[in-house]
Image 1 (spheres, rainbow, N blue to C red):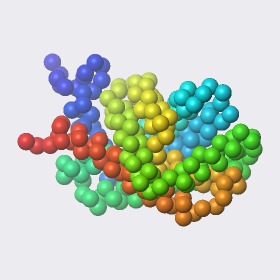
Image 2: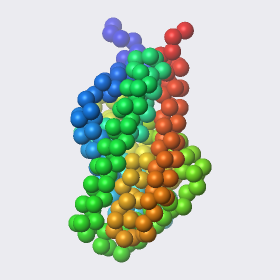
Image 3: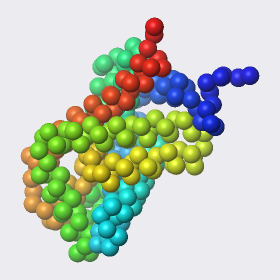
Image 4: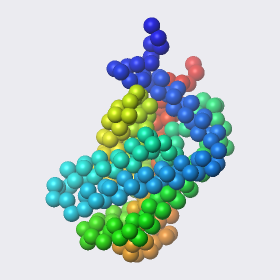
Length: 262
């Protein structure tokens, strides 16, 4: 008969997903520093490439705000697809490690070690792509440079409260996308379940800390907006905090339902 909760409509059941996410959290907490850092650099680069693709799609679009944001969000989903399918360590997705912490499978120290290494690596990977984009002259188009400046300035003008809660809402959707990717058996299935949650958070205008590690610096490095390092780090601090809370909400909800002991 097999495991009765292994498949639901040709997908792993939520109970099985919870166990798979918990196991992944344990493995992530034990990863070597060098491997974690390299995979984190890759993830930062992947998300930056997704953000670059988003900028290209929405710049000078004539489809109207709604369709343009939707198309841009689909383009941006390339970043998380690369992370999940190619394999990389993304800070926002790793918020789901809280499910392993809640079940006493990893220590708080192990969790914070992973998050610290991955956050720094993500930032470096995003910066590398930002520098390459500027040096390659990829933003020489007036429409592209104007859109980059517009996006960066909007992010820098967010209040701490706005940045925090947009970060919360963003990572609820990102972590749900990652969560559902564990349900799929095929690459096609994983890609399919990632696209809409990511398109939704991007289209609505929520805040992703790793995407901001690319978008704001590329605008500053390219001279499309003024230098505002305090603004950059304020944005990253509050968006990162929001991303942690959003991911924790998803992890805690599923842990309490499917893993918590009676």
